[in-house]
Length: 123
Length: 108
Image 1 (cartoon, rainbow over the protein chains, first blue to last red):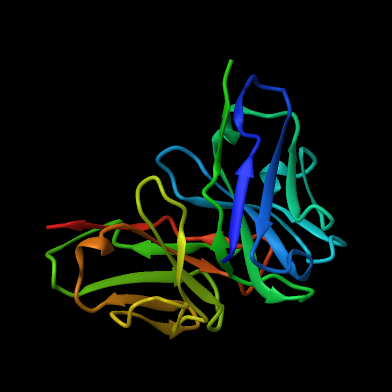
Image 2 (image 1 turned 90 degrees about the vertical axis):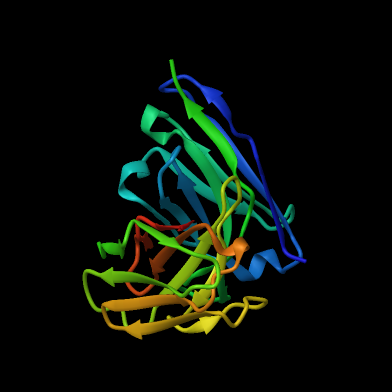
């Protein structure tokens, strides 16, 4: 059974950093690309970042480029999102999500989602 | 960036009735479209991919159609558990992967 469990969310002040983790099980983590998607309070879904199955390439939405970094540790079956220079507009629930494509050098749709971890940026 | 536009924003439907949700892409995305369902306090769930293929375990009352720029999600006979927010997403031209703003299906 596929499981994705996020952690690391919390309340921080503007300009501070936070590192989110996503522990996965139930599938071969090293064979799938992974996404981070966020949802601001009362709003829709916004894609944030994607990392290839082998970790060799990453993509980001424009608003987080240079501030967020996605990475993965295949030995720990864990996905990370390092978030620096946080802003109020980064406040959201952050979802870790599995891409559908097996060992593909491209992204596709999301077939599994974690339950999300909330991040609040406020002074 | 491909913009996804969903309509209507809210759809009021009685249980047992048919619901038709629309999603439009700002440019041709072929069939690279997914639909997700999200209930309050829960993560989204994949319903449909490749515009018309039901995901594993999704009931047959959910169907998707369309290609190019116009897509439709149809729920043939609404059950109580189907009242939720539905999002479309394109995966043809990325980054970014883009979602529609969502359609809320509520009880009439």
